[in-house]
Image 1 (tube, helix red, strand yellow):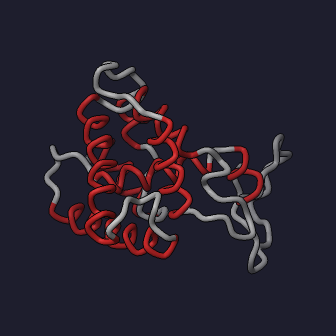
Image 2 (cartoon, one colour):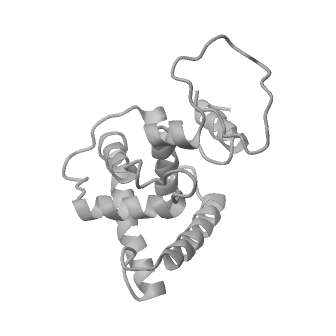
Length: 187
């Protein structure tokens, strides 16, 4: 088993997703600037996709954590050029899928329409993952979903309001009682 397979196996055990694994495995290297260019409208779209995945409830949602801007930084600075291109093309495919399903773009769609579209894309990505060859890039929606989770749970909002956080933890306590409804630890 190589390192990538080991990390993937651990990811499956921890919920099915390794957040930003490509950035960790390949190291952050700037992609060529002609491949990646995001507009403010792109960031707005990514924020709404992220907010649909992780909406505000009793805690802030992904939009408040500015996950769209986070995604653009990772795609520009850490993804390989082919991955960046696939991500950008995926944004176009998402818009096309929204227009085909709802008769309007993603941003103009209702929350329910957005949710239904992303559930369908998630199923499509899961099916693609099962038949994907090793050399193929991940499905674009999987990239968006991974970056959403990574961006949110590593943000100040995600770490302090959605998770429990201790800035400077004290001694190690290996056995802490868990009460139903307690948030997971960020630290």
